[in-house]
Amino acid sequence: MKIGLLIIGNEILQGKITDLNTRSLASFLRGFNLDLETSMVVQDSEASIHNGLKTLFEVCDVVITSGGLGPTKDDLTKETIASFFDQKISYSEESYQVALKNYQRFNRPFENKNHGYCFLPNGFTALENSTGFAPCLFTEQAGKFILCGPGVPKEFNSLLSDHFEKIILTRFPRNNFVFDLFTVRTKKIPEEKIFGEVDPHLWDKLSSYGSVSSLPTVMGVDIGVKIVAKNDHELTQKKNELISIFKDSPVAPAIWQFGNIPLEDYIVQLANQKKLTYGFAESCTGGLCSHRVTNVSGSSKTFLGSVVSYSEAVKASALGVSQQTLSQYGVISAEVAAEMSYGLSKTFALDIALSITGLAGPGGESDDKPIGTAFIGITSKGETLTHRLQLFGDREQLKLRFSQAVLFNLLEELEKIA
Image (cartoon, rainbow, N blue to C red; front, side):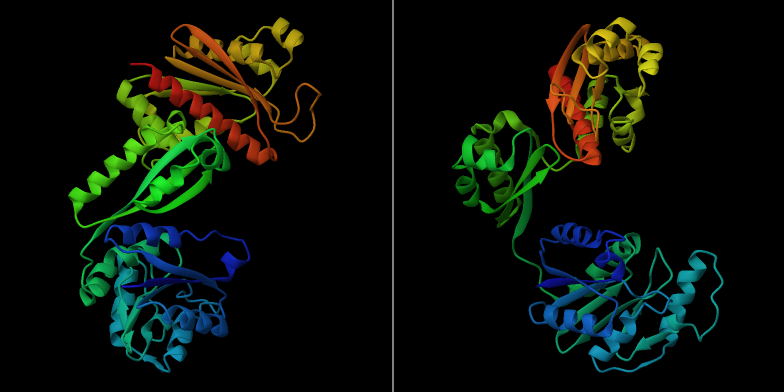
């Protein structure tokens, strides 16, 4: 079964919002050992939608659409799909009942049977929308299947979880194989260096197990291998063999995870497992490190707090950085970073305290401290160490990369402690 996704929406093409549904669909399909064949984004216009449907149906058995099912004038999906299949739109009691149920679910009054949600292309089935108001749509035409849902990610995910398996999978034989995307996450080595210098033969070794992908991330690279196997036992065996390849590779010291868990989640899990408390003294990151870990449920078990010490005065008053250190070495220095983490450690009684002070620009640079310079302080088990960073990017990029460097240092410290 080949599946395509048609994303309908001017807002995406204009850069107002980001498409999240392609990733959601691809992840959802993996649970059924299925691949997303292709994805397209088109404008809210009849010509663009027709062209997208024609292109996708040439290569796909099933097309899923997202977007354009709402009540406003730019929501053209239903009418355009009807014209694509040369069908008229008429009142549907079934669609009225579905819309009525959608509204009742949220205790909202539904206008009447003249509402646009009550009209359906001939030959289509109206489907409940468990998280929104607009009915979803389904039809089979000439051996091809189309499943239409809203563009709002929550509602699109509901379309998949509520209807895909019951409607689409029942019409196709299940695959007699299993597959998984095996992911290895690395840090602090650029993509070209991993495969060009550190281990030039790695890509070829991995390719014997499946298609290989390499995705640069913030200060790291995610290496993926799509494994296809006859059964779960063979899948596990291939995963173990891939792990051995990576552990024997010169890349091994840069690996921080066999899996695809976000760094923040991984840190929270590890800190909670080891019952180690931590916190941040942040200057140039403006609280971003704290924001990232507190996005993770359960972080409060071990993350005790932070100090956003943006000014020299707060560094001195809240963290105990001495005026002499600030005057002698400057606010962006290893010495200040060390006193920041040490002061935080004492104030909060932390197992691990991390600090960062740096220059995100624009402006303020000097010959010995250009934009992108930062110092990280780490106080753990009574010892304080510092690291100097020299990173590149604009202000927003540097703040993210600085925070990533702090979190990587936290991860390394967590891994050291038994």
